[in-house]
Each structure stands twice: as C-alpha cells, then as structure tokens.
Image: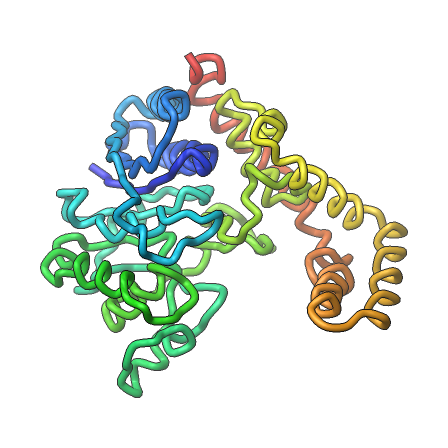
Amino acid sequence: MIHLLTGADERFAPGLLVTATSALLAMKRSQAVTIHVMDGGLSKESKDDLHSACLAINPNCSIHSIPTNTAAFGTFRPGLRDSRMYYARLWMGSLISAERVIYLDSDIVVLSDLSLLWERPMGGRISLACGDRSFANLAEDCPWPLDPPERTFPYFNSGFMLVDLEKWRADGLEKKALDLAAGAASYQWHDQTVLNYLLRGKVEIIEQTLNWQAETLPSESLDRLHIHYSTGRKPWSYWGLDSRFRIWRAFYSATGKDPLRLLLSRRETSGLILGLVEGTIRRNHWVRRLYVSWLSTLLQIQDGPQKAAIAGRLAYYSTGLGSPSGDSDIRQHNPVVSAIKQRFQNQKSPSEVTR
C-alpha cells in the first residue's frame, strides 16, 4: 500500500483534482493507494469529483478525508491568498498511522510513477526532498542558530517529500515545528523554513525532476518529471499558453471538466486576459519587438519601484521565457498533452469518470 498525503481548501480544489488523478494515472492500475486529503474546506461537489475521478482511474484507490481546521494557525503568518493550509502538513505524524508517506502540494502534476520513489531506501534519513528555486543553502533563510557546517546545508522545497513517519514521530517533530512556526522569528517561507531547520542533516536531496518548479520546462523528456506550480500563477487562475499550463489543462479537461469555464466561474478574468496577452506577445515576433521597444522607452523615464518592475518585464521578454529562446516550451511538448489525454482515455472515458 502506497500512502500519499496532500491537502486543499476550496481555492485549491482544481489543483487537488489534477494532483491526485495525475499521480494515479502514472501508476499501475493494480497498485493499492491511499490518498490522505487534509480538507481545509472543500465543497461537497469538489469531494465528489475527486472520489469519482480517482476510483475511475484506479479501483484499488481509497480517499481518506481528514477535516482540517486551520483556525489553530490563526496567529501564524499567512501565505498566498491569506491561506494557512501550508501548516497543516506539520500534523502529518498525527494524522497518518503509516510508516512512511509521500507528501505532495496540491499544485503538482505527477508525470512519473510514484511507486519508484516509495520503494527507495532512505538510509536512515527522515526525508527525501528536492532543492528549492529560492535558496541554495539553509543559512539564506534561517533566523535560528546554526553551526558553521550547517550554514551550507542545502535548502529543500517541502512541497514534495518522502517522509519516514516513524522517525518523524520519534523525533517529536510536530511539536517542535508548531512551536517554531508560532514564534516571532522573521523568515520568508513559512513552514518550509521551519522544516529545513528541524530536518537539517536528516534530509537527502534527490533529483530535481521530481519537484520541477514550473518557471519553465526542461528540454529533455518529461517522463521522470513532476511539475510544481509553486509561484502565484496557478493554472486554475492563469491562462498560460505555453506547455506548462496546457499540460495541467489537459489533465483537468480529461476528467470531464472545462478549464475555461473554471476560470470564468471563479472570476479569474484578469488571469485569463493576462495569459492571452502574454501568450500573444511571446508567439508573435513583431508584437514582441514593439513591446520590448516600448518597455525600453519606459525604463528611461521611470524611477523607483515602477522602474524595477519594468526592468523585470524587459528582461523577461528580451532574454527570459518571453524571449525567442524561451519560445521552445510553447510547442515543444505538444505530444505530451496528447499522451496525457490518451492515457486517461485508456483508463476510463470522461463520462464514466464524472458519473
């Protein structure tokens, strides 16, 4: 039995649906899986959609819903969109009686078989995790005392981890983590920095493809990739035209859902418009040249924070993802989108999934 842990409130319900179904699609249909869902306020419709989609893909799958009252984190610093669901993962040792668990944020698309990670020896470590895009070393975001060797320990992203829950419980990590998170220390990444501090020296850093933070896609095969939409641009609130967002929409639409209707129903019109505008600038050479020229002119006459923002946009469209060199990921992975849809159809048709 493989145990997966994720969580969401209603704002993250579309992401939860894709995370769970993509994880199941990447495994054998015969694999026994329990998905533990920390429920921070999911609607009945969202929970019904999740159950029917998961069981249609894998009849050996069970969904264990865990009511999660984030009021306990009322004094903790909020994260994206004022959410405190991030801290719920700190309860994992109490919520799950299993010996180990794979934790996934509910904004991840899984493209490889998680059973391969599940079977890995952990070599006495409490967790296996991947590096983070923000910081390389623990000392870069740690307000608590560190020995000199600890300052260079790698900083990991806590959105995807294999965790030895027996060692987690034996070390009393839940109470330690909650105590630190409730403190007044200043740091950037909420419970993630807390976990980095408490697990220092007890984590093995594994291949980055297992938690690929979606600023772009790698040029090689996506077979061993998990795409993590860790920035503020979630694919259920932003209509990106490049492959990162089309891959997510392929999974979502394969469950019988309409991603365009999703954005409109949630009144994410700004994300829809911004995505279409940015996609047009990226795809059209002449539009991009005119836009870059306009940004260059603005840069000469602006000061302060506005100038920094314009400089960032200019870099994006002249040398970054919005530049000609970044265009490759718009069309490069088209076959992946088709393969996702075919993979789902081989399991069940959308009409069967949504009954």
